[in-house]
Length: 303
Image (tube, rainbow, N blue to C red; front, top):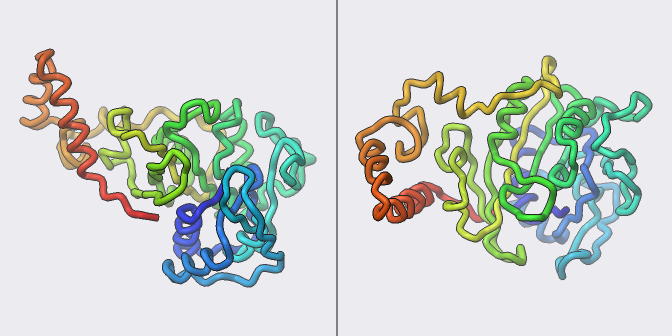
């Protein structure tokens, strides 16, 4: 689990949208792959006001690469948090809150409903009991507290699960959270070095809604999702997949069904496309064109 320059940039943007303060909980202790200079550089580019950390910078080296790291407490304090905790099943990586997220929180566990931010930088995919971890997140968050998920879309055998973007939108919408951000991070390099890319979207974005192997061009993809707990939010309502509810309740206009009408909606182009897909010799060619067209609509930002 690591926070790189792209994650730092996205965190600072969320901090600019609503100032960070109070208590933050990491799900699994994060490696912050940065230097003091790189954090300052990104803060200047994002016009983000850094706070003065009380922790030492603790500069070191990553366990997984040649990257330089800084102390996670130093980093989160520089974002504006006063208390920085990390939760894990053991103290192996220095977590100070010990709990198996497969199990619901016990009433004796301290700090329930006190965290202003929970940062899941690649933990949930390793937890088998997803409903329990989601309920635990709800129980640990304060009202107006935010959850940030950065979990894989297509990392084969990295964890127990990969997640569609609609998983987060549907669950947190059904449970009365306010959704702040739902985007996709693209990592082209298998070594995770070099540029990372980002696109922000929502349930009406064709790319966000119709991500499939044909659109994942050999790169690694992750969701970047942020939601806020409200007074009437819950953590255990079971959602129905919203995309089908949308299709059942919509007028099927192209504008309401995504960016192009090639995948969703009724249009002459969609009608002709479906007819041509029925001809075996044309099917691979037109699917190739569809995927290329869908990708051409995506304007990736270097983060």
